[in-house]
Amino acid sequence: MRTTPRTKPILALAAASAAAVLIAGCGSSSGASSPSSSSSAKGGAKAGGTLTVLAAASLKESFTELAADFKKQTGTTVRPSFGGSQQLAVQVNQGSPADVIATADTLTMKKLAGKVGTSTDFASNKLVIAVRSGNPKHIATLADLAKSNVTVVLAGPTVPAGHYALEALKKAGVTVKPKSEETDVRAALSKVSLGEADASIVYATDVEAVKSGVQAVQIPAKDNVLATYPIATIDAGKNQASAKKFAAFVAGPTGQQVLQAHGFGKP
Image (cartoon, rainbow, N blue to C red; front, side, top):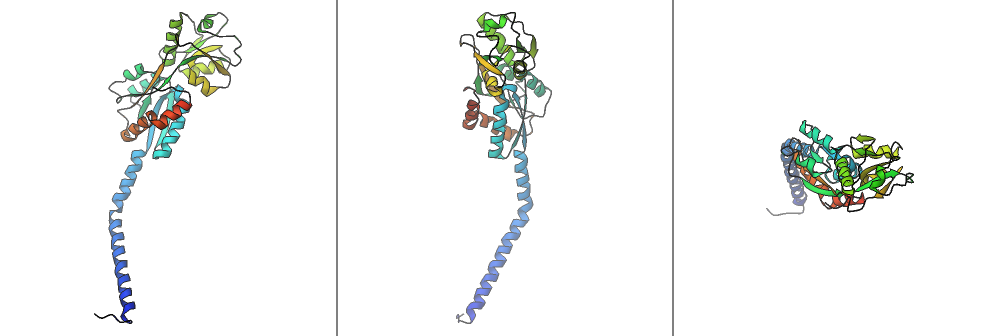
């Protein structure tokens, strides 16, 4: 058909109407699949969801920061639960609804074989003598902890920090009778910071984290013990995909940067 000036507006209107129908059709098609899309989005949110992470007490500050960083990156909320590694292992063995576990020693993790996935070492730590600020008892060596006028508290022997402390004392040939044996390393350190004890053997990162009321006395390398921290997903966890991502995140570049900023060494 020959196009005349008069017919041009009519054709333009027809084209516009056709385009509108086409767009509406696309919208209808999209709308038809929207339940699937909505379901997929909900499924994605559920997959990200929430993670429960069991972590050694000495990881409190670093893992609190890592949890916030991981949420920013993935949208997944991480809820850390801190305690002595042996307490965390008991929770896993009793079927605790957790997704990830990070302990302060490899032995505890090995005992969880069959309950957790393959573990990855992600950090290391060393021991120091924690004393009250100003070091009023003038403690300089492990041998000073055996003095009758020095009150010592330690983490219990089943706790990694307590086991490491006994190992360090054995290396130094020192025997100490602690006033009390605490449930985790932070509880032992708290006794010193509150003035209820003169000294304890804790991780270097613990004194750095607490700062107030305590200071560190270094333990020479020949008597020191290197603590290795492994992380693993828990087989009974309901969010395996995100759990694996978090474990990889901790062991990866961002995790390592945060951990080292808190005083931890490389694994």
